[in-house]
Amino acid sequence: MDNDQYITNEQPEEGQDKGTEGKAPNLIEKIQQLGQTNVPQMSGDSKIHCLTIIGQIEGHMQLPPQNKTTKYEHVIPQIVAIEQNPKIEGLLVILNTVGGDVEAGLAISEMLASLSKPTVSIVLGGGHSIGVPIAVSCDYSYIAETATMTIHPVRLTGLVIGVPQTFEYLDKMQDRVVNFVTKNSNITEDRFKELMFSKGNLTRDIGTNVVGSDAVKYGLINEVGGVGQAIKKLNELIEARNLSEGGQMLQ
Image (cartoon, rainbow, N blue to C red; front, side):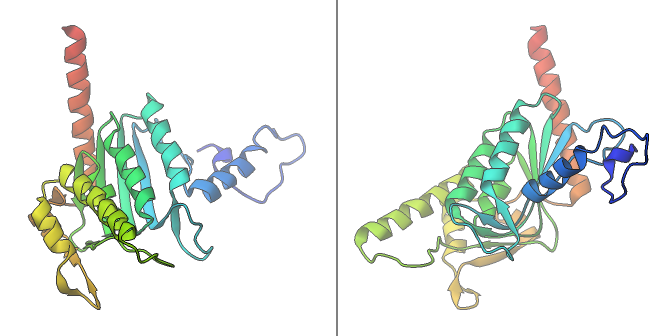
């Protein structure tokens, strides 16, 4: 690999090419801002981009610095860039999230669902709360055998104005989540609401904690599997799309 793919504290020797000096700060900044970078690169550029949704999804309110977060204002530009970049033919979304801001999560879900390129998601560890719509937004979804997904009603924190309009707003937001999930998965609305409002499954709360194969049984996720199966499926979807586009060009 090229030397400029590593960040070190060593200073270039006298006479050494200093053309890559400016790359290290840019690389550090990308890691701090987006939590990922394109280096080091493997031989040949990959046609698959990996997008990670980890920790808590941060929306309109900034969370404390000790929280592990995925900032939606960082994810959305990446999704736009994936759609525009002709070298990227497919997207792998890896989730391990406790949920977070409802509207930010729905924004990410809606953008993923509207991508023209093949997408595959995989839930590792957990894909809870608003992570559920993100998991089902892709063309095909996987969940690890031991991973879990918590399905529960929309919650508010902080001061709530106790008027009918507040409850109507919550109800409409709830409907947005239910409609998106049922539209983008094989679970029925009745079953999803049944899991959402179930009592006794979560301690001192309502909702259901769905584990691995149960998520597949309910029709929420397509298949139990890991990273290998997810990448294999994504390559199949990419090949099918390329064949379809090639056939259309010949007509």
